[in-house]
Structure formats: C-alpha cells, structure tokens
Image (cartoon, rainbow, N blue to C red; front, side):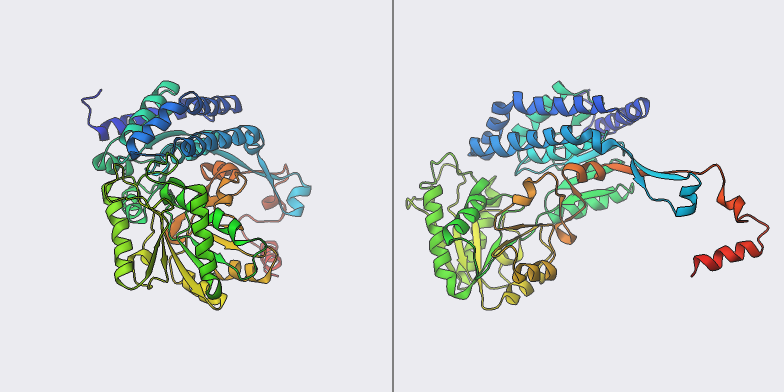
Length: 480
C-alpha cells in the first residue's frame, strides 16, 4: 500500500468511502453519536502526545494553551453537537399555501448527508481546525478525508496514526504530505471541501475544486480590526488585558487575532501604557516562558521582522513590549517580542497584509468615521472587535456601516467560542460558515419533500392541457 502514489491512495480511499456511504444509506442517530464519541476519545486519551507533537513542531508551544485550544474546546463542541443532534436531525416542517394545506398537502425539509467531505487544515491550530469541521461533518452523517499541514509534520503524522486507530478509513482518513499531496487532494471530486488558511492558497484550492464543481467552505482570516470607543464602560486595564491576552496567545498566529487598533487620538498614550502593563502582568518574561509560543518557522519570522523594519524605516514609532529586557538576537527558539507600531502609513506591508504574529499597529482617529472608512477600504475581515457601550448608537453605526465574518463587543474572539453562532468569513475572509447547528446544516443537503393532497389542485382548477378560461383565471389571480 505504501508503494501506491499519494494521489492514487486518496482516490482509492474516496471511492471506498463513497461506496460505504451508499451501502449504509443515511446513518442513524446512534451511529453518528458513536462517531462523535470516538472523536472525543481520540482527543481526550491522547492529549499529552498531541500537545507534545505541537511543542516539537513549533519549537516552543504553550502546552497549557494547546490543551485548552486543541483539546478542551473541540471536545466541548463535540458534546454540544451530541446534546442537540437528535433535534437537528428532525425534519423541518414548512408552510404550504392555504388551500393545498386545507386539502391535506404537507411540506418539509429533510437534512441528509452530502457524502464524502474533504478538509484541508492549517498549521496554527492543526488539531482544532481539523476536528472542528470534522465534528459538524460527522454530526451531519458524512464521511471525511483530511489533509493536514506540512508545516507541522509531527502532529500531522500523529493525527493520521490516531485517526486510523479510532476510525476505519471508510469513515475518516488522514493524508499527511507536502505540496504535491495537497494539490492532489484539492483536485479530488469531493461532495464538499473545507479549506482553512491563507487567501493566496485558497485561490489555488478553489481553482482545483472547480474542475469537479466541488462546493467550498473557505475560512481565510484577514486583518481583524479593534475599535476603541471614547465611551468605555470599563477601565483601560480591562481593555488592554482582553487585547493582549488573545494577541499574544500562540504569539498572534491566529486567524481572528486583533490585527490593528483604532483608538481616540487623545487616548493613545493611555492605551499604550495599559497595553504595556498588560504584557508585564501576563508575560513578565518571554524567552524561557513556557506560555509564550515561538513563530512556526524561519520564513514567517523573517516576514514579521521585515514588517517591523519597513514600518520603522518609514517613520512609524516602534514600541517593543519586553518586560524583562531580554535579548532575542540569539534566542534558541524562534520567539519574537511583541511590538506596538504607532500610526504606520497605509501602504506599509504591516497595514496591507494579515500579520499573523505579535506585532500590533495602532492608528488614531478624531471621528469614528475615520476608523469605519479605513476598515471599509480593506477586504472584509473575519472578525471585528468593538469596545464601547453595547447599547449605544455608535456601535449600531459601526455594525451598519461595516462588514465582517463575525463581531465581538467588549471582548476578543468571544463569538468564535459560542457554538450557537455561525463562524465564517465574508468576501476575501471566506465563504460559508459552520459550528453547531449551522455546521450541521452546512454539511447537509436540505432536501425538499412535498406530499400532495388526495385532491390534486391541477385537476381541480383545470391546470392541465388543453388550457382554457379556468387556466387563464388562475393566471390572473396569481398576478394580482
């Protein structure tokens, strides 16, 4: 089997999964619960090994943070799906026009599995972002094939080994590999394909999927802004703690990390000081701190350093947040101290590209519309954050005038952890949403079922040839 080229092994597995899906038909509630339970067991029983593989791939990955984000959060989402699955699987009654309804006609929607779904998962949260779509895919009664990232090879190999232990390859199969394997995977004639990653790669994935008209769900990230209002319902320390906590989690290598801040001009120095204090409180040391994660590889570290240097060269103020004044020039791991970049120019790389690291530009505004107009001049982000009065007119103005995949008010990323909310992008930040019930529906076919009454209206009202005056009368009534 190992002598078979990866592309051929993928095609063979897809054929077996599709044949098994046809033979089984629509899986019942018990089967789906069992598959979800095995997915939860895979995570729970192998927590240490999975987190340690991430540690090895990153060079330094916070084991505590990994246990929460890669293990605990996905298991809680699985439990949510198990709890609500029976209700989700029920047919949804739909309305029928009055007369057909009185005569006994009925309509309903039945959510049925799409079939075999492909998942291309990224390196920044390689377990979470493979398991999250898998949860919804299995809840909806599908089978799945997963292509994990080549940038986390140890974790990808372990995930393939564990999935093979807990599932037959006719249920779920994982295919580690590099660029060639990824290209072959994207060309497979799946019934649906989920991709999480960079927009530049998504274009190639979409082009490959289009060869077989495979529908897509794309989660692409983008430059998620934070707007700080002049009217905060709490102090700046709470604001700064929320921002720094999430921005420095995984060293900012998160698709919904705050990418830049808009703050009132007169509050700039207060906000900077609050952010400095938050870093000191949460991360008093950085180099040997096991809670502070390294940059994934040298290429990304060089990219981030280039953003910082270009902004400094163009005149932006750079404020390094390095509480213990540690020397990062000879660090054993690819760690980078967080930096604030004050009022960088619009054309700078740090303001044009998703940062995906511990750099945080801060722009000032005099009028809230300056922030709104700037945000609207970028591609629609995956997330937007607003800190201010939750019931105020300014928030409603921001919501009405901007677009983003999701919004959290007075917190960072809280919307992504709410399983009853859809999670996804809009425009350049993605297409399609999943999580919870929305994920179940995303990976299901909404099949319309209409049961005609015993008395057929076409016969009753003369709606069959030869057409006559009664037919014309129905047309006239329909156009009133």
